[in-house]
Image (cartoon, rainbow, N blue to C red; front, side, top):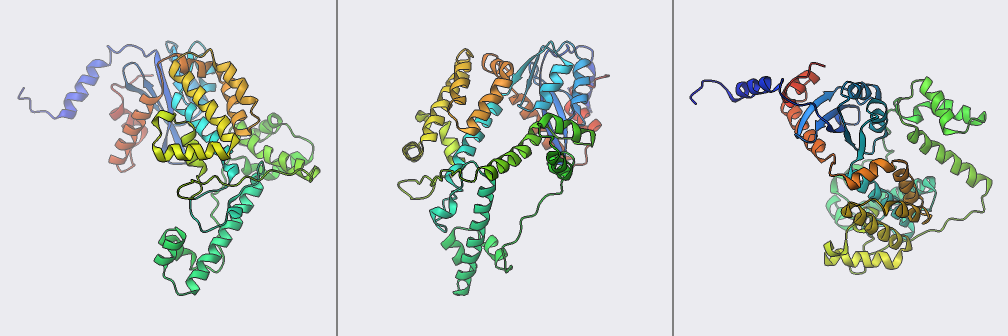
Length: 411
């Protein structure tokens, strides 16, 4: 039209005109995003019908999110991930709204449970450097698993130094062992295997309060809810489920100490019959949830090997296929029977996943029967990250709101 203005000016004027005409959102998606990865997080709220960002909150806090929802009583549907924080905020701030668990995260949680179960077949890397006995993991004992892995690292370290003493170069050692040349060069600088760096503990971790928890445990306070309340008074910022994982390790240690005769079955890694490489738990979990019709010939061969050598894999694949069928069928009626069957498998990670689904049943049921998901929120988060990187990471909340929101809210 021959106007001497920039594209930003045109958009700004259009957004200003749209401020008074936009209808209040009724179907929203809530997700978190990182100001600084693994350190500070914010919350993004998206209108799923109009596919636009409604607001950006500076933190990932129940109170902040609850207050925002209370200011918007018109909200009817809230799509969220499996995070208990947003579930609690939705219950408190918008009890009238239906909660929808994100389907992608539900399947991802199932895959993680399968991977955890397949870890009982050992830490398989596909490399032939260590024997099968070095890679096996004692079932039901995370401590034994870590000790076995530490032993493996020590033997790898010894092997690398032995090859070096034979006059081999880092590149040749890498070809023989399958490890990156840089890692080998780094390990050759040490006389003993280097300790892994442990991140500084924060109030969001129950280990931050380990001394107090240990003393309370010795005094007879053993329930998770009681200990959770006590450390919350002392500044704990994490979830109760995170605390329960710590306490579960203490309970297992006491049980093993009181009954040392209990023996755990040790499982060997399942190997690809053609290459001889061990099939890693990550690959096994991915193949477990993939339908037969979508498998390549190599993947089908691995699935057949896993089904032959691992009865647990057979049970989990049957459950995974049924679960995928329920999600694709968009009918939640078979879900209660699936939960019961999963609990009866006695596979601890699968039982834990099934119980979590049962606790969040209404949100999972809505995810199956309703068309909404958090995919749009994930897309807006990617857009937000791109915008933040373009500003060299210096963008504050107000500037991000100005760029991301179609108009400014006055509340």
